[in-house]
Image (tube, rainbow, N blue to C red; front, side, top):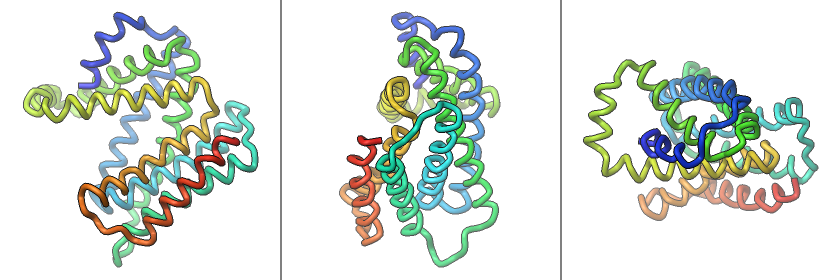
Amino acid sequence: MSALIGLPALLWTGLPDAAAWPWIVGSTSINLVIVTALLRAYGLIGFGTAYPVVRALSVMLVTPAAILLSGELLSLWGLLGIGLIVASLLLLAIGNTGPAAVPRAALQWMALAGLATAGYVLCDAQGVRRAGSPLAYGFVVSATNALAMFVVQGLAARGWRSVVTHAGIAVPIAVASTVSYLLILWVWAHAPVAPASALRDTSSIFAIVIAVVFLREPFTMLRLLAILLSAAAVPLLRLA
C-alpha cells in the first residue's frame, strides 16, 4: 500500500539522482534482513522486549559509525542525550522481561536486527543526501521495499489479496508509515545522523504512553523513568 501511494507521487517529484541508486539497493536489501530478524525475535521473546533492545543497539552503533563514515562530531551534550535515550529503551525492555531467561536464539536475532538497523540508517542517510529530493528517495524506497518483499517471500498473489481485503486498515497505516519515513529522510538530509536517529527512537516511549492511556496497560516505575530519561534527552540532543 505504501508503494501504491508513492508511485503516483513520483510523477510529481521525479526519480532520485543516479548517485542515490546504489544506496537505494543497499537500503532495500538491508530492510529484508531487518524484517526477517525482527519477526524471528518477536516470535521468541515478544515485541515489548525485542523492539526496545534492537533500537537501543542501533542507536549505539549508529553514533560511532556516523563519526567514522560521515565525519560528524557530537558535543558532550549530544553524546549524553544519546546515552539517555539508549538507557530509556533498555529500561523498557527490562520492564517487559519475564522471569524466564531470554533464549540465546532471540539474542542472536536481536543482535542481527540491531546491526542491520544501524546499517539501514546510515545507508538511507547517505542515499537521501545524494538523491536531490528526500521525497523522491522515500517514494522509490517504499516501492522497492514492497517489490523485494513480494519477490523474496514468493507470496505476491496472497499479498495483493491481503491489501484488498484489509484496505480499510492498511491505508491509514501506510499513510502514517510513509509520512514518518519521509520526515526522517528530510531530517537526515539536513541534520547529523546520530542524534536524529536517537530522537526518532523515542517512538518507543510514545508507544508506552499509548499503551497505558488507550490500552489500559499498567504504568510501572520503570516505564515512568524511561519516559523521564527520554524527555531529558531531547534538549540535550538540540545541543549536539
